[in-house]
Image (tube, rainbow, N blue to C red; front, side, top):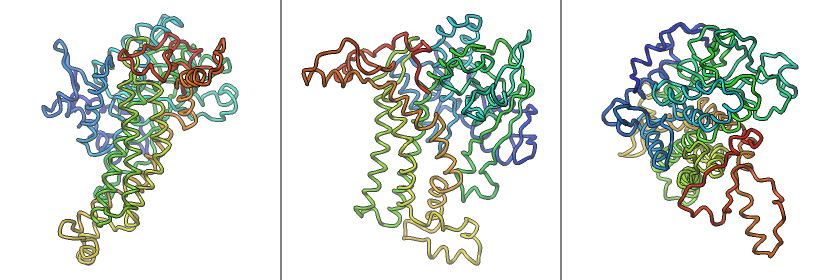
Length: 519
């Protein structure tokens, strides 16, 4: 089923406990901070029905139409289709939206991969997992993913401090489990459901089992409270901050005040090993959507910088070109990792096509660790006018319009209004409060840098280079490898096996919590 925009808007007509700036939000669809987001999400549903986009965004098989974004990936062509769909959406809306559905769908695919291992640990929730995976494909709901806890004092387990610092089960009933705690999540206030699970990657035996809970949360459930950060959208500033007023996907501290989770929505319960497994495999697919967004962000920075230097006639200078090339090389590096991750994809234990894990995680590190530098290069190319340009109102006021027309007009091609619009867009892209928030989101949205580096370490094929040097140097092969290999090791070795046209299949060890390292 392909949902309509009206279906989505109707789903929001429920009285949720939503707060912003200390005030209750009574109608999220018309609130100044949330209306752009609700309108954006509704537009995405409209696009799926639009004949101009329908064939790119949806697929019909045996009379059933589903979204490309939610479909399980079985081949490289499936991934190319997903990439085309995301490009079409982001190109159409003219900005970056991180919550368009594919990022949470990727987490459901990871759950699908782990299904057998989870069932081995606790078979009572097998039907729930199967139903969720099917629902994600067919119901077209707006799903988000609730991971991040308030955390508290991270030097000690939560049971040794305020026990609600991590979400936990406080009691069981015939109807389900009662949970208490809190999660931070982007888009939760205007979404349908949240895939809710622990954030800690490796617990050992230190964490009490009531914290090992994973479930699907109906965001209309009683007892939920959404305490939202202040939004960047401000009425009357749309022309000065075009991105802030359209793409600020607001985060909430979602408080679970003794919320009932029906048993049919529970995915695992009182199983720390299951929680470790889920967290360890969480990003194996969703990292692709995350990195893809950064590539599109790079395209926007290149476009803003290049238009600026061409407006001002500086594009012929070698120093300027060198800076543009820095942006291009970084962007092409992100693009190359995404492309190679598809081309060298791997079959998962469940038979899905995974992006090559080593390449995908390396691409994520490349994208995130250099993003702040690329934003600074963009600022340098756009110049100080990013911070100095007056508001749009000043370009229209009778007292100031003649002067701004005089000093902002560049030539016959670039008049003052065109210059102002570019400066407003570039400022909001790399130098506004919204830009700073987006940078922080990209740095921490899929775990901090050290954890991303650990993912690369545990998925890179270390044995291939060691075998190459052993052979080249005439070294005796040891009885066992000197370096502990992660689950990404390619038995064929990185120096030759990648040419094999048959995608390698991940071993069942990927479904073993003891082998999980990804954070």
